[in-house]
Image (cartoon, rainbow, N blue to C red; front, top):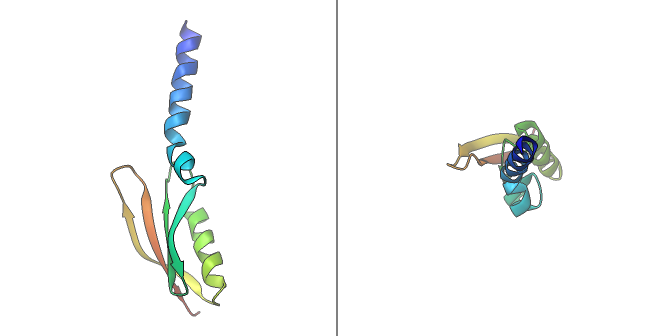
Length: 89
């Protein structure tokens, strides 16, 4: 019985941690992107700021620019929204 409770608890934890992953189908969601910047939502429980910065830099590289954080916000569900601006080096 104790083992069953542990399994159920572990499954509940895994389901709660993968909530954004299930909704977005990825560890992050690009809200918008163009030649001037990119906005990305992500759950810090699922991925890191470093991984999101790589996505932003890859986007800005298309325009020969570097990605810089413009705005960083967190909502009540612990989802972070970061806006990056693409600037010439």
